[in-house]
Image 1 (cartoon, helix red, strand yellow):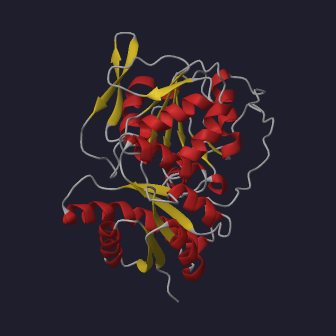
Image 2 (spheres, rainbow, N blue to C red):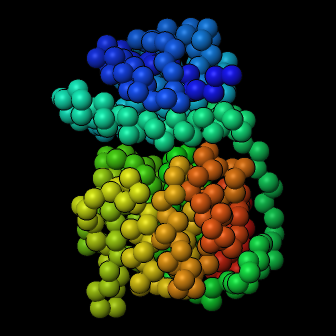
Image 3 (spheres, one colour):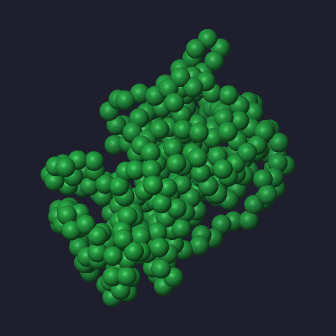
Length: 369
């Protein structure tokens, strides 16, 4: 039985079609099955070839990547679709829209004229995506194009839903909420952030694995959906209640004390866990400042970024929430926390904003909806 991930490449540029085919040829767990240079051909090839994964260009003449995705989703909700997008503001907006409508993830096209450098960068970006698709294929996990079945929200008592060996208690005070998230993140945040209390008495900081430009567009989108103050963080920002700051793509976000204030430091240091920004970088800096009064939350995403940072926060007494497996697009980052038993509650996406609000407000009956 062939367990490799079958891949259809959709791009109007012949150069990128060749580059992506070369990259796929060097990945043992993947196999190339076909090309399409426009949306209509992509639809026909999807019907005929039934690939596991489509690498879809966003910027194509006629039917663009978003329209192509919508047409494919009308007859196939199981194929995983990853957007391969140029890095500019218009493409960032359109890519975020495709993620809202069922794309699994996106990969930025390398900003280089060197073919070998492009292939190396794409190879490194594709490996975790293909691993995730292969795992979803093996476990029968539904594509983001399918509707998720979530548990009905509950009026839960103000007590942990899961007791660990340490019998950790809920925090008496939360001075900062920290969120680490990756694959499936844009759509998950758009579902969750608007359900967080607009009277949030502390700042909320987010690390989302995205390149430059994309994080600013995400922040703008979330700000339009929420009554909180949401923006991409800049170096020197002072964090305040009701502020939601998103780490800028391509840089790490750290926290440091400045007298009685806490300010953001944006640093251009090497990737951590192959990620930049990295969840671990933010969480480990927050552990030094907030200790037990930080509330870390790990949501859908590939890899293990955040596991070390959560461990450091837990050593200082912090309480931790993870998104549950059923509502995750990719059960990677939360799985790493669960395997290490470094969490206190596993919460469905639909309940997560409410649960954060209950813990921060110390109000067991707060309802987001």
